[in-house]
Image (spheres, rainbow, N blue to C red):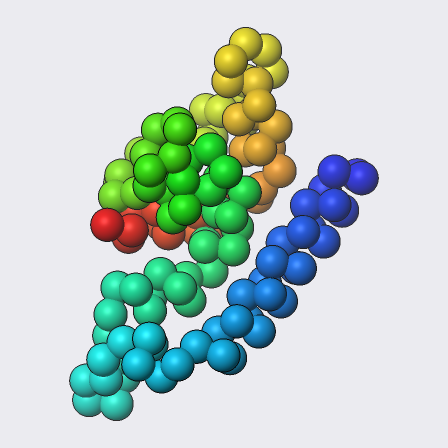
Length: 122
């Protein structure tokens, strides 16, 4: 339970930092307004609930799942990423064991949000 509690506290702290930095974001960085709604991929990605959950992935897979030392996750299909994460939940030995630890830390819904987030990053 200590790992889950630590993970939750880390996610909450990351969310709080993200919200405070969004308050300081200049309006020009938010995207273009069309018909009263902001419609840019960058804005959607910045506000996607999976981004906070995926923050743990950025260390190895790069910021937003791009340009990291390991596989790029950006732009892969959500169903493919989700299936890989579900498979990794069963890994307890070998090179994939660390991914098993990470994948087991999330609920199915959280894994779907992470997969959806990475699928939308280009």
